Length: 218
Image 1 (spheres, rainbow, N blue to C red):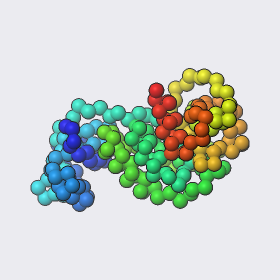
Image 2 (image 1 turned 180 degrees about the horizontal axis):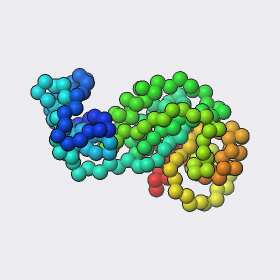
Image 3 (image 1 turned 60 degrees about the vertical axis):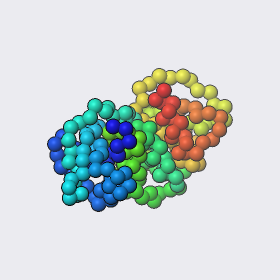
C-alpha cells in the first residue's frame, strides 16, 4: 500500500465503520492526492478506507497487517521557542507521550498546544505510525519522579565522566535552552537519574531530544 495517503481518524476506529471527516481532509484526498482511497489509523491500528460518495466521511474497511512502530517512551522537555520542531521530530521517532516541564531556566511559557497537536497528527501520518502521541499537562520540575528518568546531561561537554548503568528506560528528560540549573542537577544526581552524554558540543534542545531518543532506542 505504498504511496497511499494516511489519515488519523481517532483512537476508537474499527473495521466496518463510517467516520466523519473535515472538509480539508476530503480536499486533500481528492485535489492534492487525486484519490478516494486512504489508510485510516488510530489507537495503534491501521485500516483500508475509502471516501464516501458525499465526501463527508471515510468508510473504514478491513484492518491491515501493518504493526505500529511507535514505542512506549515519554519525552519530558522544557518548552522552547522551536517547540514545533521538537514535537515534529520526536513524533516521527515514535514517542508515546510528551510531558512539558517548567524548569528554573524555562523562558517559553506560551505554547499553542492545539497547534502542537496538529503537528503531531501530520508527523504521525507521514512517519507510518498507527498512533498519535499524547501531550500531558505542563508540570514543575520539582514535582517529577526523577528516580527512573534518563536525562540529557550537557555536563558531558565539559568533561564530566559517566558511569555506565543499565536501567529500563520509560522517560527521557531534556532541559531548556539555558540548560538545567545547579539545583536541578543536584536533584537529578540525588534521585539517581541517569545522565547520558550527547557528545562534546552543546546541542539545541530540539536536536538534543532527537539524539537522546536515538541513544535510548539503540
